[in-house]
View 1 (cartoon, helix red, strand yellow):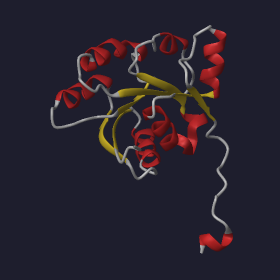
View 2 (spheres, one colour):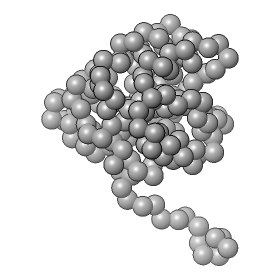
View 3 (cartoon, rainbow, N blue to C red):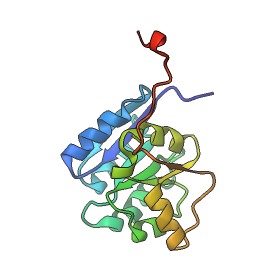
Length: 171
């Protein structure tokens, strides 16, 4: 049975990027942004609240400190009955980040300039049990011999989508 709603939290230190990600994620009416944080460790109290259930954390990896946030976040979600998935974002594919994404909570790594308007699709795909990456991350994985989990979807959000409605249906 398809999911009817998703709750996500966004960790992004750039307010402009955070707002764009929130708007793009909400293009899928099932997605609700439950929290926005400018530092990775600020999300931990939300994760420990019993009343909140976060399905996915959209985590910017370009925040100063980079990969240093990974162990505390993984520690915060370990032992949870239904831990949130973690979908990493960044400006450039970082081999240090990719190399540390061997925990089952990670569901992908997407670059902002390559995902563009497909962010809602990336979230949906990641929550369906598939890994999702963009082309530069796939290339980096190949270059450093990092085996991407299967199944894995490579999204190209740089191409615009054509409407599936005929002219008659669009009116």
